[in-house]
Image 1 (cartoon, one colour):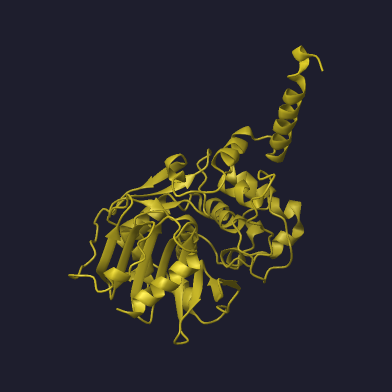
Image 2: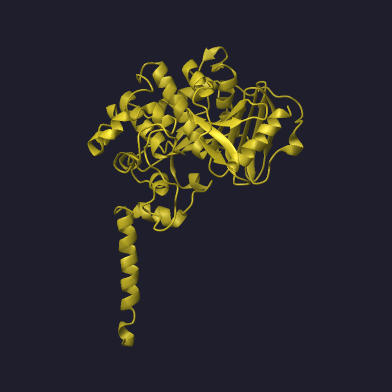
Amino acid sequence: MPRHTAWILPLAILTSAAVFLLVMAGGDAAYALRVLGHQDSSITDVEWKQRTSVRAAAAPRPWPATGGCPIRQSLPTRNAQSIVVVHDGRLVCEWYGTGGAPGRPAAAFSVSKTLVSLLVSQAVADGSISGLDLPITQAVPELRARDPRFDAITLGDLIDMRSGIAFSENTSFPWLNRDYPSVYYASDLAKTVVQRPEIAGAPGPFTYNDYAPNLVGLAYQRLTGTSLTRGPLQRLWDDLGAEHPAAWCVDGHGFPYHESGLVVTARDLARVGQLMLDDGKVDGRQVAPRAFLDRSLDPANREPVTTFAGISVGYRNGWWVLPRGDGGRDLAAMGAHGQIMVVSPSTRTVIVRMGDDEQTNIQIAATLQRLADQL
């Protein structure tokens, strides 16, 4: 090949690769750049993602505290930013490192799903949504036009990850057309969750699924006329007496990433866990509906659905269900990179750990369970 034309082949290869990747991205160049530039998710993604803000409560309720921390030497601090331990409604221990601080919110990732479930339950309680047995197609009829089998999927199926919708967490080449990045890096998430999900089978079997909470969020928005991460989340923050502002990551259209968008302090996240121990009440006011508590804590449908590192866990109403050595069960909200909240009804303890990966989520959760048993 003459020297003056040697650049043609490399250019053709690069052009073909770029066209291929753009086709895989559905023609969305901005989405392709986010996936290729950031690749796997990170706790620092909140620095570049757009967010809606949530103010601290108008009347903050500082945690009652006790002196000293009896389990300080056992705290899993490696790579953690914050650890908060609440026992019998009192803050008995907190630790901060690697940039963490009491008032510094951090990405909660899939802990967001628990908040989505709670906020939807409030809308059901006040009549804004008729119930969790509502078919998703009543709010999102476009799904029926794509596949009539969507008619069989209810809001409850989606919240429990039993919708029958296929989902893969595979992020291998060619990256851009995979389920996980198509949600996490979406330019228009509402459009994505209407057009992309496919039915794998009838509702019933468990499949952890990031399409599901976003379909719930889209249904919420259409049925109530508001995003659950705006007025409803602010009301929850006020009801809880949250001490610090929070945020929720949104796409370029302002639609929340319902599966992963919550940005919150460990102190204020622990208030959500405390609701489960206080019959859903704050200062005698019912904040978490009784139905939410019953559906989360009732033994029905809490059988193991999957196994992590040899530990069999269930999933119900936005909570993971963890086995205890005494035959009981604890609840856990778990997000990528080690964002964990364990709620232990038998020990009346809530422990929140936020930061970066140290072990797998289930290993961290098991450690927090053992710490609760020491109190």
